[in-house]
Amino acid sequence: MKAPTELISAVGRGAARALGASVLWRGHLDTGGWAGINPRVKSGRFMKILPDYEHMEYRDVYTCLLHRYRHILGLWQPDIGPYGGLLNVVVDGLFIIGWMYLPPHDPHVDDPMRFKPLFRIHLMERKSATVECMYGHRGPHNGHVQVVKKDEFSTKCNQTDHHRMSGGRQEEFRTWLREEWGRTLEDIFHEHMQELILMKFIYTSQYDNCLTYRRIYLPPSHPDDLIRPGLFKGTYGSHGLEIVMLSFHGKHARGTKITGDPNIPAGQQTVEIDLRHRIHLPDIESLRDFNELSRIVLEVREQVRQEQQQEGGPEDAEGLGQQSPQPCAEPPAEQAKGPGDGGAEAAAEPPAQSGQGQPFVLPVGVSSRNEDYPRTCRMCFYGTGLIAGHGFTSPERTPGVFVLFDEDRFGFIWLELKSFSLYSRVQAAFRNADAPSPQAFEEMLKNIQSLAS
Image 1 (cartoon, rainbow, N blue to C red):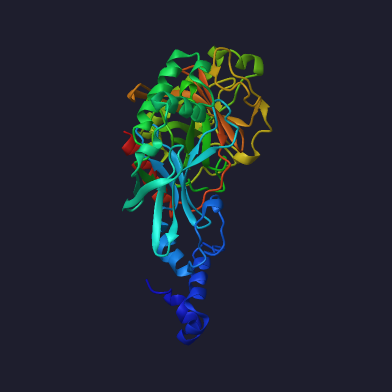
Image 2: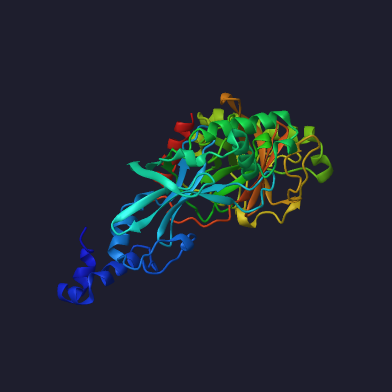
């Protein structure tokens, strides 16, 4: 590959020869978003085991590493059956590293994300990039990365024996359980939960880090969004914590699973929030009565059903519009009809200005993995949650309540399951993760959902 022509043109070919090609390649690294990379300075998370880069040139770093593998930078979802995942590929010093992001241990939804390296790419010598698998506990070993097609790549481990442990599968399972759940199997008394955990270990470990990844984007934001969209960690009963992407689509908001489980796999839309239908909760004592909350929600569901019949379509074409709901001085006529005391009412004011917070408590009989949920909320909306049997059998959308606590936390009451999920924002900055257009984001959502189906 020749030195960047735009840089040569800017300084003139005579000056280019005088400055030397190294200066030009260094400038190309800076303008290409890799500012500060110096092949002669050891940096990054693995600096202690870096080879000697004293004779490495900027040109080699760009052509053999950064340019060659530039298409795999960003956020990705691995194809691991129903479980999915979240991979972030970044430039770290003179490495390109694929970090798998994992939710905190159940049920500590407010704890920070955990992450571990799955692979790394770097220059062991000039003009030769080396791919290493980081899976297992025996150090880096020979691996392979292949760009399959646009927005898709695969990894392969060439030495899977490095993933094995001396104590056999039992030791591997105990180690995985401590890392994945932060506990031992003896600490988990729920038999069904034990079965789910063992099933996940057997299923995921068979891949041996030989995976296919598909690109995902962070959702675009709009000034009138209820809260900032993005990634959240949520509680899902015996399945533990899962990663959900909250996005806004006209009159609806959606929660799409980035990680999943055998009931609702990754890629499926776990919750949908109808932003046209506010739910005003009753006083705190009445809210403790599950039957009272159920009555309110079912009245709203009937109202939504009648509106759908009048509009002649299911939930306004599932809310596929690109714009978020605009604040209005008065609610539209069909939205002004609340179902009674503590019923639904349209959001007549901008989301950020509505409500100073009201007391909140879960009704008696509603289970929650995390009892440390907020005791005040900003507002509530009618929503539906997706439930299904094992293997995603007989899926159906059931009524529920979306509870907005603050900018970084929300909840969902699953009426039929009598359970509550608490979601907390993933506080991490991801580069190369923005969608090039709203249409590209919508297409990405359709793709991952179709694969999950």
